Image 1: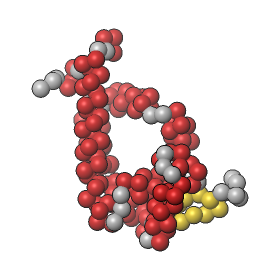
Image 2 (image 1 turned 90 degrees about the horizontal axis):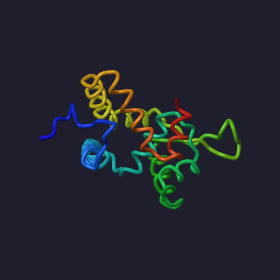
Image 3 (image 1 turned 180 degrees about the vertical axis):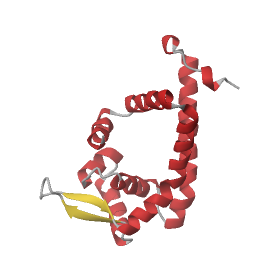
Image 4 (image 1 turned 90 degrees about the vertical axis):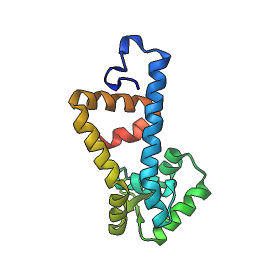
Amino acid sequence: MANLNNIFNPLFLKDKELKIAFELLFFTIKDFDRNISFLLKKFGYNKTHFAVIFLASNNYYLTIKDLLLILDIKKQSLAKIINKLKKDEIIELKQSKKDKRNKNIYLTKKGIKIEKKLTEKQINNIANAYKNAGTDSINGFKKILINLISKNSREIFKKKI
């Protein structure tokens, strides 16, 4: 097994080190997905439902147009997701304060509870990883993640921070 404390030397990033980073991201995504899949099925939702719930929980004041860009799905597919979440009283659409022609997506009280259930284990996993990694590692990790996401996603994320 590779020594995970000594994998990366930024001066000599070779294919092998980059491949290890890619593998670590793969397993992280797989484990995150596995951790929420059971709960999503229990609620009758899929990953796209989760994405809408998660993004609405983070106060991005997203519109349908924003979600279409972020999720890269067709309007008809998103409409089904939005309608189900509205019917289940998980989200609500409210007129935008910035532009009266748009509606922003918000979680209801029920939606907040479900979002907490869906993300609680992930948040605990991240907290434990941070605790074991230390401050310098955390800041470096955040920089790497920011540089891995698309320009569009980065712009959306910057609105939050």
